[in-house]
Length: 261
Image (cartoon, rainbow, N blue to C red; front, side, top):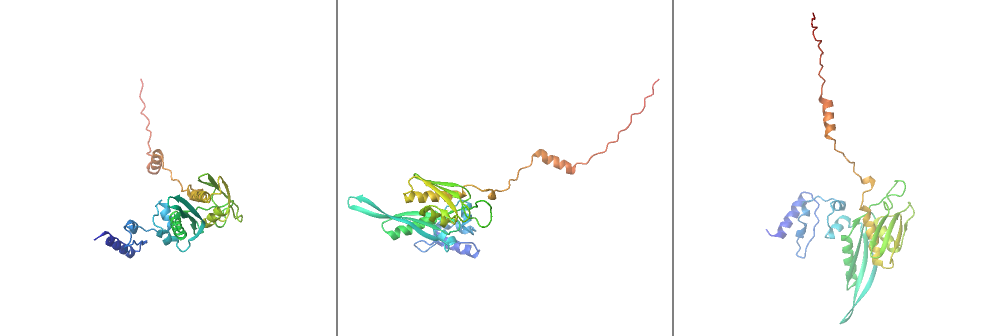
């Protein structure tokens, strides 16, 4: 049995067992052999992939889990010219943001000779770079989480973007590019500050995306697990003796009197 036939048989067995199978077909029409390890898993959501820090190498995975809710938007399409011996060569550079407006956002950049090809490639790269977004509260923890959990900072080149929590109803106080990324991430209220050469769209977009991705770089108190401390051996022995030890009554006998002459 060759590799393609083995993969097809494994897919059929996995589907019969009720497992989640992501089918990726190659040019020959057979499922990609690189998914043999995935066929035996029980991945139900995208969060399980992030939980184990697994690398997403195929954009079809994102389409499988978030395909219906994903929205994309082109931030900017820039013509890039290169001088060669044959003359000037023009290429197009596309910046595309993608998100589901509910805790997932991605950013993709792609060069190509045609506008449509560059946008299509940027969408694929944006899907592969999707990260989860942790949202929090400002003040009381009532209602739905609406802002960033704390102050986070992102860097790219000379640009530094800082995201600051804001009260409910404030909105996103930001420039157009960071505002679009924050909206796609599902953040409703946020203050932003930026410094450096913010006129460079690529730098400020990547710095904002870096800041958003850092919201899960630490654990907030509501995600802390209760620490179970081990008991000292001396305490274990003491508890065991208290439960099992029984006192033995000892009767004191009086020594007989010695006659003296």
